[in-house]
Length: 372
Figure 1 (tube, rainbow, N blue to C red):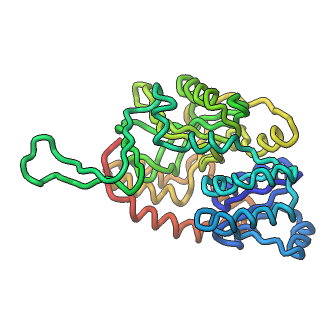
Figure 2 (figure 1 turned 90 degrees about the horizontal axis):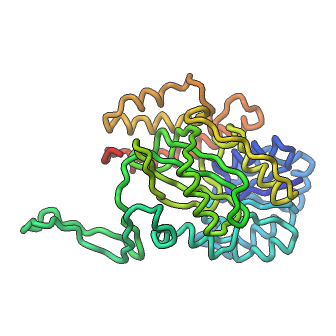
Figure 3 (figure 1 turned 90 degrees about the vertical axis):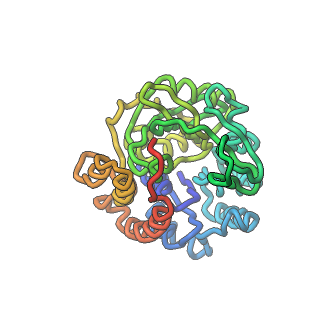
């Protein structure tokens, strides 16, 4: 039993932990640092040494700027490793690998994603309001640059040029909190499902979460499953919604790929990586665990969540700031698990590289914005 995961961030750590726990030999290809990939204890030492003798590499070319080189690299490594399944975890890696899908599957390797046309359609935010208008907030698709002007202003005060090159989406703000419906589907039929609610995001007005909890809402689940059924998607997917205190919700975006908070689902019993291996490779379907109650399970990306709490303090939200500092509370550490001896090498390396990237992101997003 052998799998390859393409991407070396927190998602890859979650995949490695879960696949290893199921006895599945795992190897990770990483686009930034070969140290990460060789640091993952995902293959037995003898097998790793044989791969080194065969000149196996782990650091792949940039799939965005060098897609053809990236595809050749991945195909060469797959020929050496000979896994039963390959799981690219990020959009760039998936998109660039689609043209090589035929070669991958001809080698007997599972590529657990649906048709490329469906994939591109679902991830295109400009099409969501056309495909699923009943679930999407007011949206306008614009191209080029526009001018924002006050309706009754006679001077140039308040005039602002907005927009970017190419097509962009203008979506009405929906005040509320983020909810993610996570799933593994086959031709639109949901096989496994989970839901989470975001506690803290960076930026706080809506972005990547650093603290999240288990959650369940039947209305959101019904909407997500209707969307997936109509799309006929196969593979991983996370549908992002926003919900207000009254229970109303709107669809924000669809990510037809593995998602960043997948460790929360694994810690809650919905082991998407190993379930995907068993379903797509071995044809086994383990019963999906029942939904978890709101807040029953929580994960945080420590220490990044503490840095996120600083932004909340800047917005006047002292409660979230203090909660982010409370590392003694009962929650799961999402990436850095000091007591997990299998990842003592990986954790410090990821902490060093990941913290540099996170601080750069935080510096650009930490300015206070509108409350949501």
